[in-house]
Length: 320
Image 1 (spheres, one colour):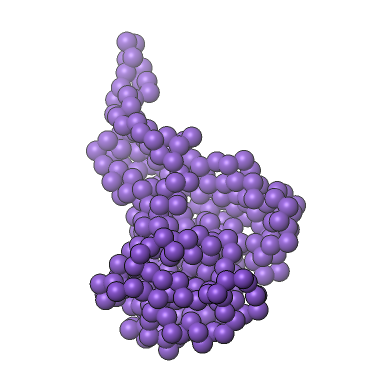
Image 2: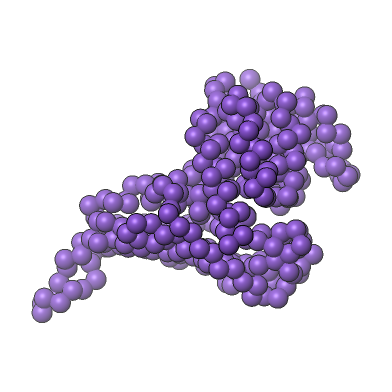
């Protein structure tokens, strides 16, 4: 079986997905849809009805259009992969919640960090003996996109439509990942800023998730050098991912000759390329979508519900 796929979108992230489709022997990209653009590609179409002939449709257009396309495809019988966020306001989320169950089981929201090595690390070591009880998690993921010339005129920088673009496109991934591994936090606080003064949307944000006995700090920015760091601190050890390297230090009760605490020995040391992990997680997530189609299965309702719950929390953070 070869899966005929149509995609809505053709640049940036959509281009990454197009490469995944073209590189998968189980898939054939039949249509690339855009409402107005004309490209020198035989697969390009401005006719939305051409997408309906496909087995699966991928929505990788600007965030503000996701719900409209999902609504337009409500009677489509094939599978849908929709990039996050599913919706941009609570009214849209509420309407998605009312989709019938059979429709929900054929929609896959692409929270690809669920399929990352980072997710595996969190799942394996949280509350492990080497880490102990969780005390604090800090994630920093940032880069200098806001200082690129093309950024100012992009939809990401447009504060009238995407003031919280960083929250909607990057922080949402980490919020979803943490909730996927640890369950939902009892409180969330978000501090946004425009640091670069390029464009009118926020280019930097600090998200704090409050749990019963620990907090999670997530810093994302388009206005810094490239930084990908993670610290997980427990009562018996800690994990550090920095400069593409993962180290686990344990146990706590490690002393010098004077019986003072000293840095615990390194329990594990290995390479961890954050960018490669992100790329592989996207591929893993896409392959999971394809495997469900090939096996003629459906997605659990719980995945749909968790995606909307993450979306709902992101929208609430914008309104706080």
